Image 1 (cartoon, helix red, strand yellow):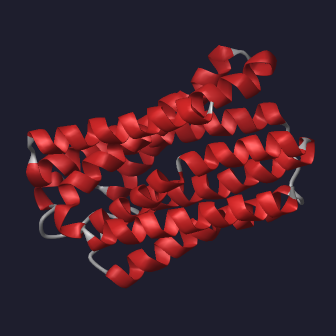
Image 2: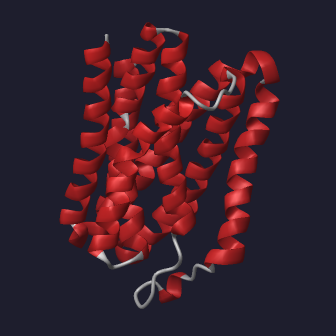
Length: 239
């Protein structure tokens, strides 16, 4: 069991890093990458985070509370974006807006992935492996999302590489934290709902507008559909 755990965690770290580096390599197709990333974030929110949140928290808090947590995530990010980022699509070609909140959300999600794995293994080995496989299923899209958001907000490849490394190793820190910070499964479900709201905002109000602003075409739209389809397929495969 220990060897399986190490292999899965190693695979998660490696896939997150390699997928991000691959995205950085094809940055000349950024509009397609952004479209794909938007689709994967929508898929993770609707087919991974929200169902997991309902399963973990509905019996304690009820579905209405979960939806309030989701809306809180969406609205709080919107307020932060409007008050601090000051994003203006008309200036996108000359200067990128401050994407620290988007990047932080992605890295915090990776940290929460590891935290969820550690928490699940404290309950049982079977649950731990199940959660690990679920995280593994969207690790590729996590790396793509981290790279695409970073590239969209700065032109420094070195900075993007550092962000990709941090994003890839974040689950390891999350696992370590899980053994020092105790949180109930129901409360963890509410946190997942908040992240679902964040991802919905990033996808619909940041990535999709940027993708179509840079190069609106049928291929940009299809890349979004493809990203969504990939996540849906993985969720059903690992279900």
